[in-house]
Amino acid sequence: MHYEGGMEMVKQQEEVKNVVRKKVRMTPSEAIVETLVAEGIREVYGIVGSAFMDMLDLFPTAGIRFLPVRHEQSAAHMADAYTRVSGTAGVVIGQNGPGITNMVTSVAAANQAHTPMVVISPSAGTPTVGWDGFQEANQVSIFEDITKETVRVTHKSRVADCLRTAFRIAYAERGPVLYDIPRDLFYGELEDEILEPRQYRVDNRGSGDPASIQAAVNLLKNASNPVILSGRGVVDAEGVDTVKKIAEHLTAPVAVSYMHNDAFPADHHLAVGPIGYMGSKAAMYTLQKADVVLAIGTRLSVFGTLPCYDIDYFPKAAKIIQIDINPRHIARTHPVEIGIIGDAKATSDAIYHQLSQKAQDRPKNQHRLDDISKLKTAWEQELIDLAMEDGNPINPRRALLELTRALPENTIISTDIGNVSSTANAYLKFNQTRRHIAALTFGNTGFAYPAALGAQLAEPDSPVVAIIGDGAWGMSLHEVSTAVEQNIPVIACVFNNKSWAAEKKNQVDYYDNRFVGSNIQAPDFAEVAKSMGALGYTINNPNEMEPVIKEVLEMRKPAVLNIFVDGTQLAPPFRKDALKMPTRYLDKYKHLDYEAWRK
Figure: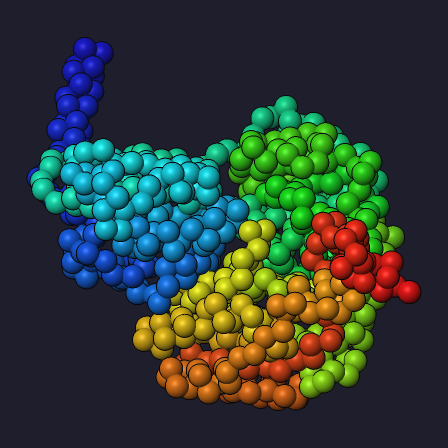
């Protein structure tokens, strides 16, 4: 029987081998497209180009929608947000040379946002490389420092294999990967098989070192004032419910990392809000008192932990337990007591399992609950009081307050970089994950609107709103044409103070109100929107915010709200750590010296 069973096993293995390892003849374009289909790609963003037209021709039959943008920078911002909302890596493509280099800023932004993405990068044909021909650029060199990897196709037989490698690294290292393919390698024929993603990549990283888990549990159960910091990794791993359980077991308040306001539900009694620039004072005062910080799925970025409101809140003596899927981020910016390399949810599950297995449950700390409630109530009242101060014509905080009050709970909100966009960090509250799509630490303007388009494509039935300053809007308003053409009903809320207000605030505080380059003029954004086929509204009164927003939500069409706000009511400078009062030595500039104008 043993011999017969062994023969049967051998026979089954041979049958599996014969079925699975079957190669078929196809063109390189077909191999690429079929690999995209296997990866679940339904949309690719870019601008049409001759370099990849053979592949593009296959998209409709394959069920892939090519979404043409007006500028390639927008393509990667759309893919970035699509990935953050859907969990599926976005894909972008452009013409070799200028089409691809137009994506540098947005790919760099996705890299710092840790967003999986594949950049299909057609390059000069192999017969002409090095001749400085039409639209030739060394794209691999350009993208090496702003991607997780650059994968080069060296032969037509490798097109599918290299694309699989690109997806594998994008997911594994959480960031964009350049897939560089000479334009002539889309043509010809090859024999290959199309693999399923499970055959070449593993997404589950596990729960980390058991000894480290045990040490973390011991540290937490003996902590007097544990605080949890929940980050993007918790959202990506679908780990919020487990973080809730840990928080409730420990009576530990939960702050969210900078610009990830959706990493813990704001309506939870232990939620204290976001840290970082223009975050929550409740979160900052809470974190300041921590003796143990459980940082889950966050790299604890330098900018995201800087003092704000003159509160140096990040604790110096607290013992930090940092959980991150990427070992490069552990203790990179703050020394840790325990570092755990693992999936945010799996690791949190392991920690909670051990915490909850103790013979006696930890009693609720009513004193901490009362403190949290008082801090949150005081901060909420401060936000309202600041918003209700008069503005000319509208206090930007009042506009943000009215906006957040008018939007449904499931609204996805993207935010740009700038004075009002950053102030929004204090007002945005989410009870669901994948709702907050922020520009994050690369800090480029022109992010929010194309990102909102990508988010809407990922979740067509949810309302999507972009919060943008008028400066950043000048870099993205051309994509209203894309929204109209593709019927993407995003609402652009343009906060118009006729300035680059974040930089203007620097010139107020450090340069004696000498405004060089910070005052700007613009056309009537509402009328421009109408001319492009979208809805357009001009708002000069805070009481107009709610009825206009409700009207636009019902119409489900692309809309632009030109909201005029007071250009003198400005948030503190972004980079107080990087600015100094001016000193001048040459006689012709001495009147510009800080000491001179202070007198």
